[in-house]
Length: 92
Image (tube, rainbow, N blue to C red; front, side):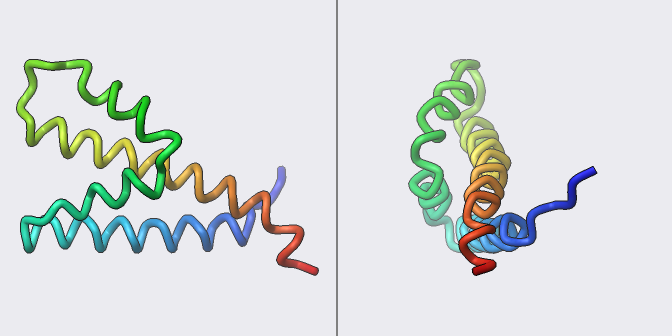
């Protein structure tokens, strides 16, 4: 079994810290800081937005938190992938 990528784990941890700050800022100040997560995960945010709004009759707040949760999960996978790709150049 292969071991986890250390660089991917570090990138994912940094993304989770940024996402936690965005969610906490949204909860405490009522700002739209969760939109920043969509900008960071931009190539994947367009199909996720479409997926989150499939249930058009749902509450808007529920759709917003569903979208945020999906973006955080996909962002973790995306940042792990980028860290995994950059692991070899960082070792040199």
